[in-house]
Length: 343
Ligand code: AVI
Image 1: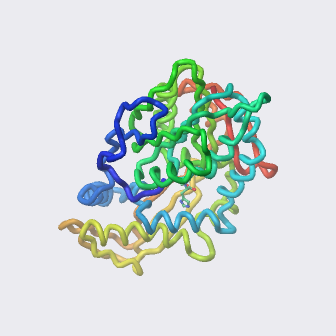
Image 2: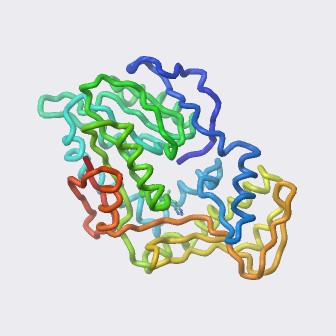
Image 3: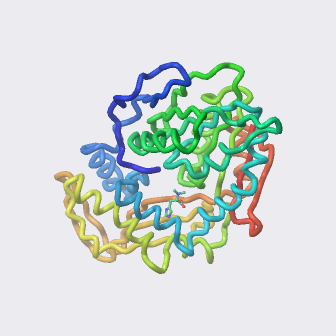
């Protein structure tokens, strides 16, 4: 989730090194977020018939800081609801794997949620997880996490993988008999288009191998009265997060967008079952971006994010299409957030 995207080979890495070694396992990831490709990504979206920007551009340093503030907002119930739910079910979820398993977290910006699973032991006192593989595109954040965890989780092998989890990810080798659990919390699955979500889940299934378990956390709320404020909060933090996209384009892609001329908008799309975020230009305007002109008609929007809120039957169909079976469902007392155990 975090950016500060480091796509260079990790100097501490020996790709393919033996499991158990202190290593970061760099798959070559992607150069999608570096310098000129920010301009290329943005131009592709802003010259389309319906203007869009890819949500991956949200997470520069300032975007990560603003996202962290979002997670603490009174209106943004997702993070704290998942956190509390996970706290109460982590022991049971962890116990679904035999001791000595590997936990593979997709989009791991820090170890807070994984830590709730990693601390559990079996009845004989053996750690249920012996290895933790956090996957994220932000190499520096992963390396900081590994350093922290060397102190906080002695005895746990931490094998970071710097990679874009939306592409096929090569996992560090592990002994064949080791059980594995995938972990994708935070409702990040909702930010993927449905076909991309199925693609991600099936690639994860293939990468994790036969017999793997998968723990999926997603927002279960489809009440616009709760959702719209969660994505358009009173303090305007989400608006700043959205507008930061244009700030980033001005800084990194030769843009001259007037941030004061755009308005943040969050709308519930009932048909698609998703919250959409837009940046609206109330007036006709034109701006420069990477040497080109981008024109706006009055009221035209840039569609910047979708956050799908899947009904259980739709999620069930998606996980099944990816080859997974739903084994267990946990919901918080208000039914806002769901954690599913798949195998
Ligand atoms: C990261 N993701 C799950 C957040 C969400 O709720 O869709 C991103 C976000 N966008 C606006 N607020 C939070």
